[in-house]
Image (cartoon, rainbow, N blue to C red):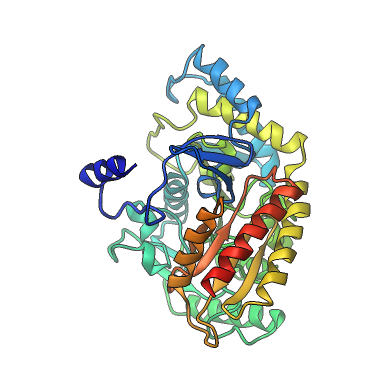
Length: 427
């Protein structure tokens, strides 16, 4: 392993982050477990950054990939592609967007890039509204709308970005307000902002902020925003790269917690739909999707092998009601972790819904982020046989818990027990 780590440092960028003091090489997985090159077995509560959505080595997906690879792997979007059409049909129907069109990409970053291209072209404006503490990818334009300093290496951007309050319920100038007053204050702030700028193209928002530490506003905030945006013709882009496909348990899409004013104009997705295969995409009303007046293709977006995986994965997810499982098992896991948190002064909050759970850590007796403790808990959890993630806004001090949606009650209890020990070791 040390040899592989040394080789990694010799040929890959310094900014390519690795978890753990002794980085881990994962060699194989099954169900909700993975194994490293030393033969150690881990319960996986992060799923390759919320990407292994159903299970590792899911037979239905591996079979679909194997069979498709024996026929043809790739032909590009210049040719008709049956698996791509079939998956687009299913996603359009599930999207809730009327007269929906679907464009496939290779990642969430590329999906958000495409959404920005569509919105700015459709609206003839390069001004974008984004949420504070947000993250939308690592490309030049996506970094330009990311409201998280830890993931924003440059202030240069092709866009004018204006940041709006509301993505973090328990921090910031409105944190002391109740949910209704919080929403009203954020809406007033949005109105004030719109009165001082050129008409923006769109608001882009994650229903639950992923890299930001699984933070979210009160339900209905984006519906309230939508009423204001609609008065100005401003589009709403829901970044569902991490929240889509039932992960939140209560809803199939994260935006449905804010559906009072109808569906978004554009939805972006990626990660879990491919269960590890590289799939991203954009869903939009036909008039928006078709607004480009120049040719475009995607060499690798929608390739046959990834579409076969997506079709098999989505079918499994729906037929086995993994959204319902996320709601039931995730609810148990959140309550279990909240019971632990009540005994530990360093745990500020356990938040989230379904199998998208954040545990925010602070210095005991203070309300200051504690990134040192977050790193220590990450290490201790690994030693106990559990893999989790971390994130957060001003400092990386939130633990991110997002297992495959097929997680069992027994595995949830096992993971919670390991995490409890890891938390106690840090405090």
